[in-house]
Length: 125
Image (cartoon, rainbow, N blue to C red; front, side, top):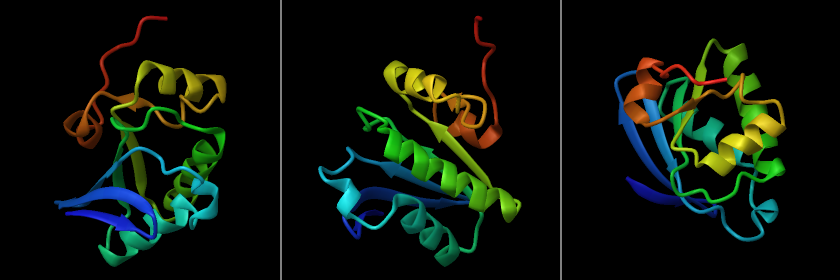
């Protein structure tokens, strides 16, 4: 189901025990939109789940404000025993998470399937 939830262009798909959301290019002036963490939380509540795979293949830049929204959503989900997994990050976005020291909180999965299974190939150091 492709939709624009209060300005955020998202594709939403429901699977067994998981909600998969593909975030399309971050809208210009996204700071004027409702917080992404709130939008995704509300969507999870509507679907009666606390397990989210966020697909970021179409996100060219993870702005620090967007990373902050992911941190807030992660905390909220963790308090409910939920899970947030991110996949499809470009190398630049993986580096942005590393720079913010969030790569341990948000390990990068290659695709939706790996994110759901929690599979990550070993990374060279």
